[in-house]
Image (cartoon, rainbow, N blue to C red):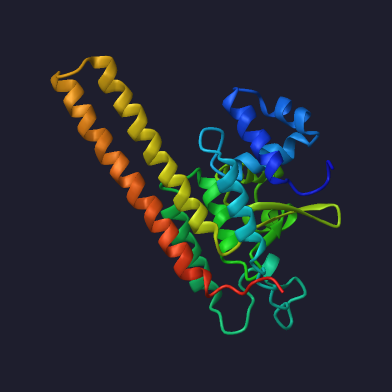
Length: 246
């Protein structure tokens, strides 16, 4: 059904469509699903070049077992609560929190678009881990278009989720956000390995340039393999600390 959850057969259809080089709209038409659903599914599970039906199914099952952390109640005397005020929680120093947010934003902005880094920090430092467009606009004092662009960049990396809240769009993150971020890095290293290795073939065997590129390719492949193994190790190690869905 168009509004239901994707099945394993749906995911196999997505993988087949990507292998054929079909656009998202055509894959969605074949499966009778909204294009936005197909786009989110692919972005959340490896992107168009790294999507695998079995892995996507396993990741979805794993996420379904997790219970989201309930939001804390608003701080006393602050009708807006932590979602919008951000710092008016008993026991917190607002200036220290703001200084920390700036420091974390600067760190993330080293590899992300600046506005995407700011949105991510807002979500990370929100007790509920979720915010609406209005919340983010009030917090960051920017236009809706800026928020939309930043959210799109984070969504492409699979780092946040979109939800509907009384006809408003709400963005949220959960505890496995860094696991997904690490997988993005893993796939990036694998892509580097494959692309550099391709250059070795183009430049010809047994040439100095080819040897140099093969060495670099092995380096990136080793990084990718190590990162993938580490991701699975820590996912397993931390899984026991998350409560299963009742």
